[in-house]
Image (cartoon, rainbow, N blue to C red; front, side, top):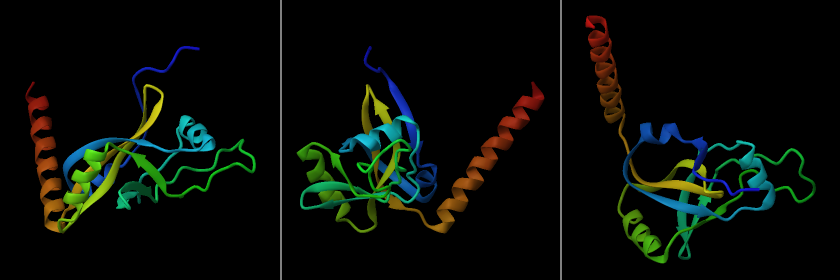
Length: 154
């Protein structure tokens, strides 16, 4: 059987782009059990309330929901267990320094398979205020209206 190639997206956190200013992104591997991988291959996961934190020099992903595998046995995993992320030591050192600044957090943006390996796109983000969100929505609507007007003219 040939190995998988390319990128297959499993889940995206669209709300993160609405709630946070994304400063930088990192790609990290995930430490998973067998039933978690099978559940992900079935395309089932949710990043809605997920976040990452650094504990004892390791990066952990919390509150990401990967449902139990339907055909699993007693070896099934807990749906919201903490999962270790795999990053280079230098990247972890940078993240430690940047997350200690006020208002910075680590948020998962997407969960995907890259060449057969489960990966998570992690963002270093700063929370938006309510007026920032309203401004972004107004810009998006104005852009949409301009595109509609141009289409009508053509």
